[in-house]
Amino acid sequence: MARKRRNSDSQLLQPVAGNGLLDRRLLLKSGMVFAGAVTTGVGGIATRAAAEPLAVDPWSKTIGATVPGYSTPSHFEAKVVKTLGDATRPGTQQGRTPHQDIDGIITPNGVHFVVARAGAPDIDPEKHQLLIHGMVKQPLTFSYNDLLRYPMETHVRFIECGGNSAPMWSKTPIQANIQALHGLLSCSEWTGIRLSTLLDEAGIDPKATWMIAEGADGVTMNRSVPVAKAMDDAMIVFYQNGERIMPWNGYPMRLFLPGYEGNMNVKWLRRIKVTAEPTMTKDETSKYSDLQPNGRAKLFTFPMEVKSVITSPSGMQSMREPGLYQISGIAWSGFGRVRRVEISADGGKTFAEAALDGPVLPKALTRFRMPWRWDGSPSVLMSRAVDETGAVQPTRAALMTSRGAQFRYHYNAIQSWNVAQGGAVSNVYV
Ligand code: CO
Image (cartoon, rainbow, N blue to C red; front, top):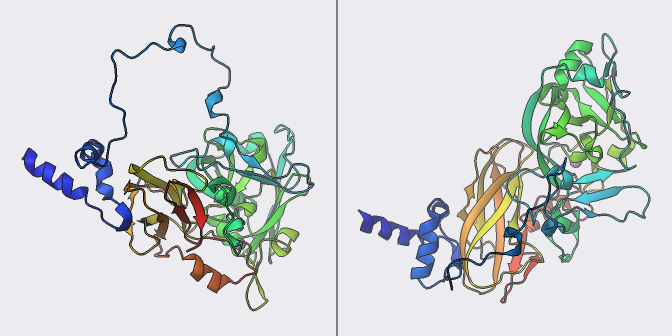
């Protein structure tokens, strides 16, 4: 029996696709993978113990740091921060999530991405109010404390800026890390109330099909939202990963439209006006409209399409030596759950299916993993996601053909990482 199992495990160590991709089922049998790596001459990862017992380090000989009221990461993690846009430039500020340095699916609140056009307003929740008016039976205002009395729900959902991955529209591949290329994407556990609860209370005119949502920041950021979305899964959220939303992410409350481009999830929400038509605000005409090859612009392209990216290894990182690795990354779709992620290590010639960390949640990041035996030779890594509607993440060539050169938003093509001889990882177009 033991012999038979060993035999099938060694079969699992045979590549399932080009350039050393291994069977995802090996991830359930990690011990066998690493033992197999040693016996098949690939080499293990750990160093053989030189001496026992282990030396006693200085930090084991003294009393450690006192407990702070609010903990922050180890100072050894000081480089794990948002990368910021040019703060001296007036107007939009950006902060990007360091996907190369985090794992799982939840983005820590301190590194959740930010796009803010007038900074974060310093809102006193005791004084902040929300107004719902327009085509309703009864206009209503709610204080912050009123809103906290409505029934709450919690959901894990991603937010992706409509302009995430914009550097990938460049004609030649920009050499940067994943944070710079794809960092306007985060995922949190959000807690709040259903917007439909408040709209039902105000009583929507049946002829109303749109609303405008407006924030309390210095540019009164506003966007038109279909009433159908508002009545479906839209929320007003107060908590992010269990604590009150960070000021830069909308404190004390933001609109949350699962799967829709980030800009529509209006932060610092102060007003919802129910309307018969879209309002055609500056942020949906000058921005977030999609110029097509025929010269006409598409308006109101809201859900973010199926997409994935390998976070490890990724751009500007370096593989140290040949051997066993775990390819890892994130996949998501604004249309629902991720059904499948396929990995290629040979530039798309062959693909094999990755393991997905469960539970796979709708409109949330999904973590995928794939064992890989890198033999030290040049390889091109790719991930390709398929969502539950059957939509397949496109190649870059297909996306460029369908969207044209003037497109600036909704980049969702397959990301290719080149692993050079020697291990340097770079952004490459295939
Ligand atoms: Co759009």
